[in-house]
Image 1 (cartoon, one colour):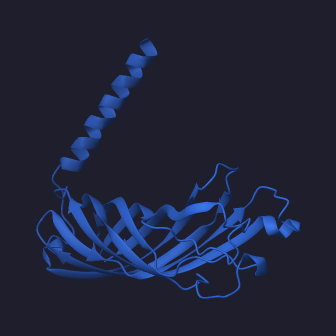
Image 2: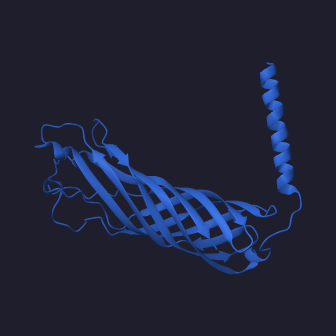
Image 3: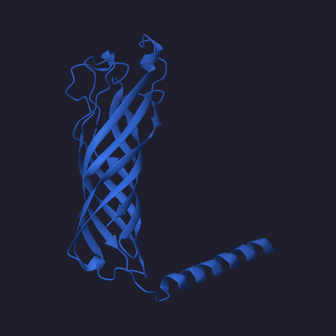
Length: 234
């Protein structure tokens, strides 16, 4: 009981000091930065994506091995008001997902249980950013929006399918995304780390030519989902 009281007192003291530190008046960097009607910048970051599968019949799940990919792109921001911005963040997103299938007598060799699915997206989101009031040199925000993409590695039009070692996906998926972040107003520029969840809206699977394919025959729907961690400079 005594330990609990001490911990609560320490947390209360920390939150009080932290709150005073944020609200205490300080010299503001780039005071007029967010008053510009238009602003530009660039970003880079990392991502981790996998697939969510919906099956026609219950079976052992296809295991998805995530890898760490990268994002890079530009930013265009339109100021709507003190608390709302409309922005676009066109860029290049690279990632790879490795699929591991459960053993099946239809697989002829061990390598058939494994498929590499690289993806190179030209990614173009349109976002609404909802800002809080600026606190000295920081400003938290949330964002939400939709995105269209072109997957340059989809193999959608490739006549070869998994029987020839080619896992195919659609070339023009759509996404929605939700994110949070924080602006840091530095002396020379604005730095913004952000994290967002990205979710495909439709089925991305291009099925094999044979309906009973062990790779795609039992999949009703396959959708991307993942996390982007970006670092923005304006």
